[in-house]
Amino acid sequence: MSEQVHDHSLFDAELSGSVLNMHLLGRIIRWLHPYGFSLLVSAIFILIASCSAVMMEVVISRVLVDYIIVGETSSLMPDLGMIELTRWVESQLEIPPIFAAGLIFLVLAILFAATGHAHRLMLVGAIVKALRDLRQDLFAHMETRPSSFYDRVPVGRIMTRVTNDIEALYEMLRGMGSLIGEFVPFFVALTIMLSTSVELTLILLLLVPVVAIASHLFRDATREVFRLVRNSVAALNQNLQENLSGMQVVQLSQREQHNLDVYTDINKENRRQEYRSINLSTVYGAFNDSLAAIGLGIIIWYGAGEVVQEEMSLGGVILFTRFMNMLFTPVVMLGEQLNVLFRAMASGERIFQALDWEEQIHEPENPVELPERLAGKVEFRNVNFGYSKQIQILKNVSVIIEPGQKLAIVGATGSGKSTMIRLLGRFYDFERGMIFLDDVDLNDLRSADVRSRIGVVLQDFHIFSGTVLDNIALGDPSISRERAITAAKTVNAHGFISDLSLGYDAPLVERGSNLSQGQRQLLAFARVLAADPEILILDEATASIDTETEMLIQDGLHKLMEGRTSILIAHRLQTIQEADKILVLHHGEVKEFGSHEELLSMKGLYYRLHELQFQDLDIE
Image 1 (cartoon, helix red, strand yellow):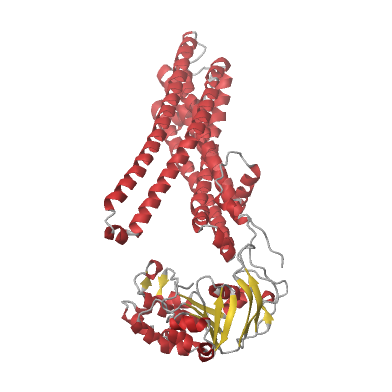
Image 2: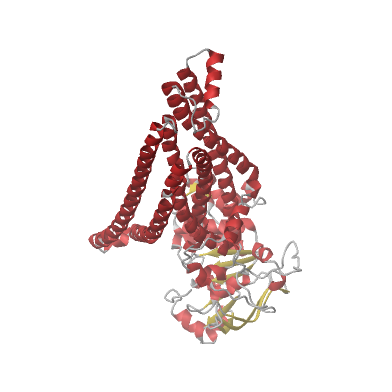
């Protein structure tokens, strides 16, 4: 089997997103395709809202000022039919002109608000659904990555892609939708202004590149500052989590003041970077306000002369001032959105890097179908394996475990005990002809089929959010409530479960911290028994259980192992003595194999481990 080579350091690379990657943007947008109708309706709504915003300005300037107050209707600045509409409303409702204008303005305002709100709802709804699908696809993809991937990639990097990076895409897509809504009135206003006064419009347009350049410079200046702010916040969170999770050690060692001093220094650095960010934003905001004031001054200066010369009406000048904001606002928003866009490009690269990561367990093209019930024979045949090419963990390991037999594996830390279990569970790829299940090569079986026939109880038993019953059945529809309760009774877990306020429906908190270590492991036995696997693996399953609890589970263990092939990794003397065979590993090699009595009589490595009473031996 050819081994794929993957550079896992890529997951630790800091991507800048400094280049606008259109291919990447296209891949992101493809997740929006199923919601194209919602986006189309959203676009229609924003067009209506934008046109309503322009019409509202026309009503104020051309209708209210020119037609009603000044009494002038002829002007180079078009009224877009609003004066004629006002007259029609006057005649139809027989109301004064100012009331007619107010009624038209009210209708436009309601239309603007309603369509703007509908646009945002449709837009955000489509984006949220698309990113929901993307998040689900990413989660499903990462669930199928092999253990070798998670051995080398920090889980925090994956969590960042599923949470923060998806959120960055949301901000980008939402901002792009809003930006489109700002540019519609931009072009409408620009068209009207050019048709009225080309000279004044061109003078104002000279300020647009200035705004664009200022936005570009601000983006460059703030990019590094924002990165330092994020780093300082991450350092704060890391320090806080580290100290709160280890509070008992902190208090026992009287490190409160020292930890406070360290946290204060990190907090001061965060404050310094936040101030830099605030100062830059303040200067940028003041600069934009100054440009707006300059533009307003130009319009008043130039427009006043035009009014005096009767080439432009007073309402036209006012309309120019209102349209000026429609020219500047999209440019400013574009500068801000480009900053979001570039950050989102880096997030998109990280997301699709994870989605495109092809590393996975080899699955056979024509898998062998297992019978309904396995006999349970397991064979390791000249197994050689290492997590990397440089370090070999298992060296020519061979052992046959007959159906229903109990095998104990003992050895010091690093001897390869847990590695044998991981290979049997198909968590890593290995060469053909090394491991067999009922004389079938594991490489000819689907990994899911293999794992469904193996029950593993680890010392660090993982508890999921949900009830006790949920943690026994694990969502398997074949495990009924009665079957789960029967399994719990068999391993003597029913007693403490019944003492819980809601029994099997009692919710378990994070990592099952409302249960003792012994109770969590009893629950682990109930979970395995309910699944009814043919092969049972106990990896240090009783190492952290007190004597009283261990007495409770010994009877359950005997029932659990009855009729099953069992592999035991433990250093409890009683558990090992009860095994049919004992495999002694040393530096990945089989040193001894036989029954408890046979190995003791050999006076070898097992004998020395036995003399140490096993408990004093540091093992995997």
